[in-house]
Amino acid sequence: MSLDKRFARQAQNEALFREVNERIATLGENAQAWSPDGTVEFLCECGEEGGCGQRVRVPLDVYERVRSQDDRFVVRPGHETLEIEHAVEWSDDYVVVDKIPAAEPYVEDDPRGAPSS
Ligand SMILES: [Zn+2]
Image (cartoon, rainbow, N blue to C red):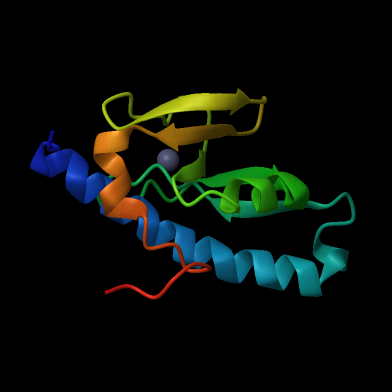
């Protein structure tokens, strides 16, 4: 089972935004003044071509939970791409999506996990 090229590229884009958000998360942890309620503005990880550029407000503890699995991402509500992921958690501010098995190889290079080959 392989993915359409377009969706493969989108999945790779999502992995790229994950890298950016990892830096934002580090900043958020180091500067609680930015997020007195523990909520940080991350970039939407929907992987739209070039990035949708929108922000998504996610509590740090939720973000940490998402990052504990390398095939999960946070996007703005409505930014899910059903061809490569399905929603597992919703709020007014964000949606947590889980990659379908066919998309996992494109995103498994988690920045916290093993180095890429
Ligand atoms: Zn988006």
